[in-house]
Image 1: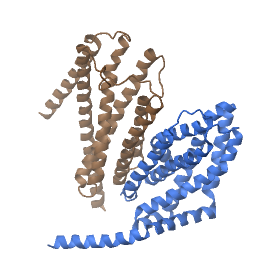
Image 2: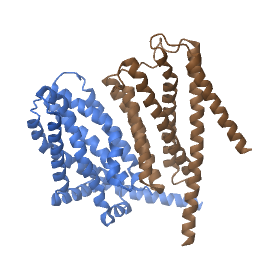
Image 3: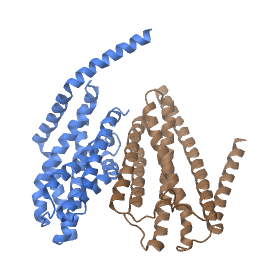
Image 4: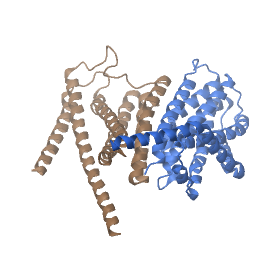
Length: 235
Length: 248
């Protein structure tokens, strides 16, 4: 039954992603000035939005871990699993953003990369969370969890500063499509639909990945705990 | 009934301890600082190695880019910051490894004193070391790059210490953090550099504005940002240092 449900979920997510692909590539009209290359927008922006969501989950879980570390160790372990899993999924999504961005920029701007506010912020965000994952590899046990949580908080603090710094400096990235002023927003309903479907599909896919990863991490925590108990008993 | 009395007892005890702490916080910082400075005075390891390393970086950059006078004004700020950054990483690592030997760090953790005093003293000591290096290296730097600030040179006296503080405060904090990992020496730059990037950007641009005198920053925006960065990260470091020190 459980296996059946799992397969159904997988099939549903795959169907949703296929539908999102269909919408983005075949249904949405070709953009007037940029042409077909604009379609990368349907992947780039949803992934960017979701990577921010996952990093935010990681940040909140890290704070919860530190808060519960002494008072509720069981819940703290769950929070740590969420922090790690969402950081990993966030890095994957952020990598997609960093790869699709230059692919679009090359034909439209004529350059692969520029040190603009959003690009730099995203890159630094990616660097910080990669360093977070490295820290988690280089140390282990309860102390590593606390140290990683601290680093995650520092990383989250850094992001708005980087963003402000670069905005004062120079910016080339297109203005925000949503909430960027009276003229912003997608006018064509078919484009909006393609965008909406892709946000939904990627969100469901990402959350499923996150759920799997948390599940695996919780199991590994349990195994480590059992190994510790066995080692103590064997002594 | 018993619970409340226990709580009251704990409260009274912690109030007692807090009373002792607040009275001697500055004295504690002074003691720790004195200890670090004395160790450095006897060995001179940190300053010598930093000085030579930073000198090497300055020479290497000069060789690699062979800059003209105008170009060197543009890049000098960056070279100065990066030279300081690289040089201080090795010393920041040393700052805490020294405490690991003979379990000094564990002894420090057992003292009832406020942990933030240990952190502040360490930051101050490292700040002094890096500043000494910068003061000694500054003239060499100006000679090698044929520099003559076209802007308000006195501003450098605010920009460089603020940038150094950002580097040293974060560096000391993350050195304490990475010392718990397996390959501690390797980890510090990996986590410090991404976090330090906004401060580096602000410092480089502030120095560049002073050296080129192009008036691109009339409101001293970068200086203010650097100060803001220092305040924010120092506060968070102080708040979280206890967690890092007691991380098991």
